[in-house]
Amino acid sequence: MPQDIPVKSGASAMVPVLVCTLAIFLLSAMDAGMKALVIAIGVYNTVLWRTVLATGVAGAGWGFRSRSLPPLRSLRLHALRALVVGIILITFFWGLARVPLAVGIGLSFIAPLFALLLASLMLGERIRMAAIWAAAIGFGGVVIILIGQLGASDYSRDALWGTISIFVSTVFYGYNLVLTRKQAQLAKPIEIMFFQNLVLLAILAAAAPWIALALPREFWLPLVGVTILSLSGQYLMSWSYARAEAQYMISTEYSAFIWAIALGWFAFGEPVTWPTLAGASLIIASCWIATWASSRNVRGD
Image (cartoon, rainbow, N blue to C red; front, side, top):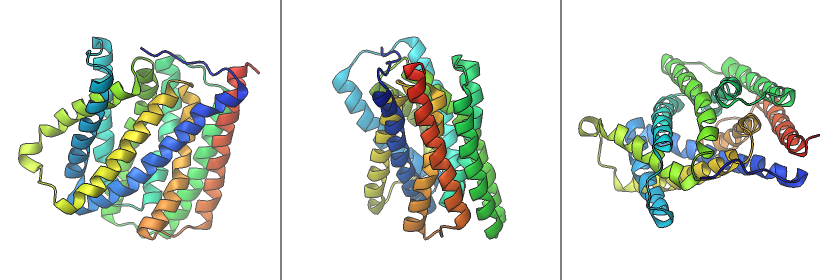
C-alpha cells in the first residue's frame, strides 16, 4: 500500500498543495449544488442518493483495479471515517440550507484549528511555526468575514440552529482532516472512496424504510453533477494528503471561502462585502504561506 511519497525538489513540493486547492474548489462547487438540492428534497434524501451514485462509480473503479479485500486495519479506518463523514454531511448540509453559503463555509474554517492539534496528537507531526502562522492568518480572515456577515444579517431562529449545526459538523471535520492523512498512508484513493461510501450507504440505508423518497426525474442530473464533483475532490484530496504533512494541507482549506464568495454570488445572489474581500485576502496569504513552508520543509531549509 502507498506510503509517504517524498517530494524531491522545491518546485515539485508545491504540487500537493496546489492539487489540494483544486480539490477544495471542486468540493466547494459540490457544496453549492448540494445546498440547492437540500432545499428542494431535504438533507437525508440528497445525501442518500448521492452516496448511492458515489458507491456505484467508486465501486466500478475499485473493481477494475483490484478485487482483493483490504486488510482489517484499513477496513476499520474506512468504517470509522465513513461514520465521521456521515455526521459531517448531515449536520453541515442541514445547516447550509439555513444560512448563506459564504457564512456556512466561513464557519467550517474553525476545523483547521482542531486539526492542527489533532495532527500532533494522532500523527506525531511536529507543528512548525510557519503552519501555525498560516492557520492563524487564515482564521483571522474568516473572523473578519463573519463579523461583516453577521453584523449585516437579520438572523432568524432557523438560521441560528443552522449555525449551530454547522459548528458541530466543523468539530468532526477537524477530526476528518487528520483521518484523511492517516487513511491516505494505508490505502489508495480509489479504495478509500469505495469503502468509505459503501459503509456510509449502509449507515444511511438503515433509515431508508421510513424516510427515503423516490427521487424525481428532474433531480437526477444535478445529483450526478454533485457526485462527480464529490468523487473528484475526494480523489485529489487523498492523493495530495498522501504526499505532504496534514499541517500544510490544512491551511489550503481556507481557499474554499474564495470559491464560496464567487459561487454564493453567482448561484444564490449573495452580495460580496468589503469585509468579505478583506478576509479573503488574508485567506489567500495563508495559503501562500503554507505552500512556501511546505517547499522549505522538503528542501530542509
